[in-house]
Length: 392
Image (cartoon, rainbow, N blue to C red; front, side, top):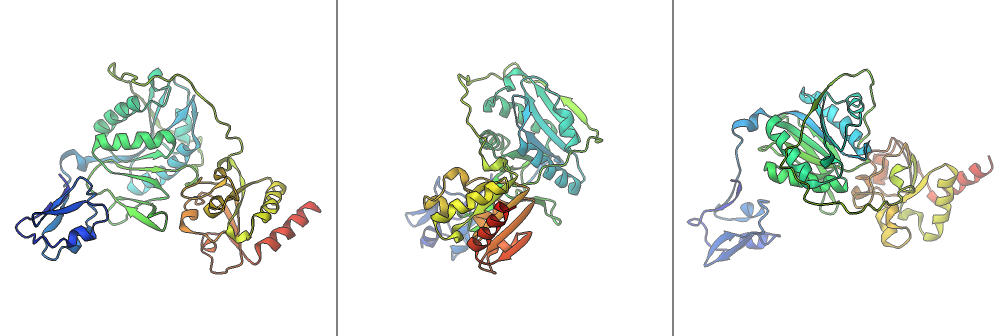
C-alpha cells in the first residue's frame, strides 16, 4: 500500500516536517512524528527531514496490471445525441492510440440502440462497446459505474478518457476509486511520453499560475477528464471500418436514484457554441468600451467573451467568461482584444482554430499562441474595423 512512512528510530522530533507541510498531514506527538488523515503524500516533508526518517512508499505494478492495453473513450449522449466533447476525445484518443500502436475503443451506453456506433467508428474508433438498456437512458452514476468497472476489469485498457461534463465529473472519480487508480481532472494537454510510454496529463494548477504534468505509472487505467472545447474534434472518415461489441447489464444493476423531473436550460446564447468570438480583456480600459466590442462582434456574426478580471469587476456576466474557471471555447475564429494571455485564460482557448490577438504590449503572452498578432491601441483598431464594416 502506498503512503508516507516514518522511521520512529531515526525521528528526533525536530518538527521541521510539521513546519514544511501545508496540509497538516504530519504531527509530532511525544517527540515522534506521525502521519495524520490529512496527508496527501506530496513528499515535501521527505526533503525537510534532516535525519532521513521520512519516506514515501509506492505500490509496485504486478500481475495483470502489466497486461493493460488500448485507449478507451467514454461517449456521453443525451436522448440519443452524442455530446460534442466525445468527438473531441476521439480525435485525441486516435492520436494517442496511433502513438501507442493499439486500438481506440469508444464506450457508449444508451436507453435504446440509436445507430451511433457508425459515427463513432467514422470518428476514429476501432471498436465500439455498446450497451442498450433502458437503465442507461438517464445519467445514473451508480449503474454506469458498475457497468464500466466490469468492462475495465475484463478488458484492462491502458488509458480511459472522459469529458469533464457535469456527469463526467461525477462518473470518472467513481470509476477511479473502484479501480484503485489515479485521475487527472480538467486536462488541457494529453500526450504519450516517448521514453516511458506513460500518458502525460497536463492541467492548470495552483489557481492556474502554472501547468502541472501528471503521470500514473503504477496503476491502470490511466484516467483523465477533459473539458469541452479544449481539443479539436475528430474529422469523420466514412470509409473507416470497425467492430461493434454489444454488452448487457446484470439483473442486480438497480437504478437507486429515480428521476422525477427534467428542467431544460436555454443555452442558445452560450459562447461555447459560437463559431466567432470577440474575447475582451482588461486592456480595453473601461466598461464604457464594451458596447464597441459588442457592436464589433455583431457585425462579424460573433459573440462576446471575456477574461476573468472583467467578470470580477462587474463589467460582464459569468456566462461570458473564458478560461480555466469559465468556459473552454473552440471557435473557428477567436479575436482577443486587450487580453494579456494569463495561463488561466489560455487554458480555455486551446481549441480555437484561428486566433487574432490585438494588444499594445508586444511582449504579451497572448502573442505566443496567436495565429496573427496586431500590436497597437486595441480600442482605436476596433473602432477602425467597426467603421469599415458599417460602411461596406
